[in-house]
Image (tube, helix red, strand yellow):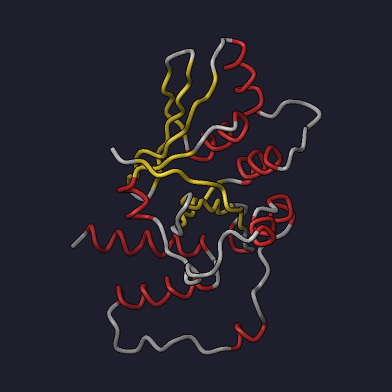
Length: 214
């Protein structure tokens, strides 16, 4: 089973997200991106660890880390191994205890960042659920750009801002005469262009349902 390594690109929230966040993962050494909608507590657990913030008392994922270490184990990797009905499934591999634990991706990644463990996904799932951003030809190795995109605490404190007031006033592309599926394609392209990955994930799920129903 072919695996692709992922890295955390950022967290995104919008006023309409109802408290949820989109965790944006990026293919290491590639351009594909994978948005996963997670809850605010899980987003905070990932963000505080990546920013080096130490809470006064251990958070749940810190407690799990302490328990694993007390029993002589360490997390060697986490992997997103399945997707059913648009829901992702992950496993945590614990060396020293010979354990493979089923987990939600958000919990698995929150644990991974605490052990500095790599994050993987099967190639077939990334191919099905990942996106190629419109600016894929842009330089992705720019340090300033990476620092800005990974400023997770700022993304947790604030909802994602509107990209540009002028963009709001522009007329969207006409979808008159298109099939519903083609209209979704247009909406998906627009969401990716605005880097609204949460909305893109919802549109992608709707398209997958249509395709699975024939």
